[in-house]
Image (cartoon, rainbow, N blue to C red; front, top):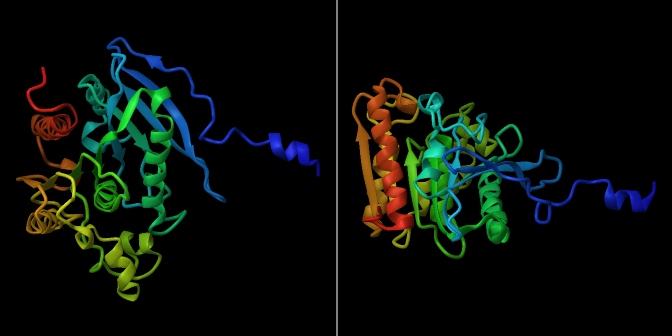
Length: 289
């Protein structure tokens, strides 16, 4: 085996790989697709897509979006059932509001167990921080936004990030307590065992375990008729954050099942608009134009 060949045969490492040219849309929003941010031994390369506002010359604050799918499936560029037909789509709307958006892969429960997916999100933030100058972003101003299983991971990232805290978290119908799930459930697949048999790991994987006074501001939005992740998950997390002395806004949405199923389109738009306003207030300041 030629040792010189081994040195050059692999693709460049994500930390130094050249960035592709951005695609510039008519609105001025720019996109960079399939940026590798991490290589995990024995796994697929992990990638992210980046949506950037119209170039202003100044670094843009960041939304890190985490997709749902029961930790078992899902795509990084999918915000869920009710936004798939939007034109422009939700990430283009965020970028038009002045926020950079990174939509990230993470390893699913068929590939790894907890805390692997959370480690991947931390790796994505590390990479975005390393490449911030080239990308013209400011990861020191980051709101994490997740839906369903992605809301669970986003909550954990906001509550357990070492070093500087995130600016905030937008959580749509995310699980907050994995300890009561049974064998064979998506939670058990994430943990790698029946939660009852790995009680400490289930607690560590539960955002409720990690509430603290210095947590960043949370907006928790949940359908009152959610049949997959009961609304009590967000109610309990909001209560725990409040009792700890952190800021948490809870919005329960009447008439809505999981992924806003059953809501009229205009109400889904209102949920998105309020969520985006929460993020932009934190990242750009209230009273912006």
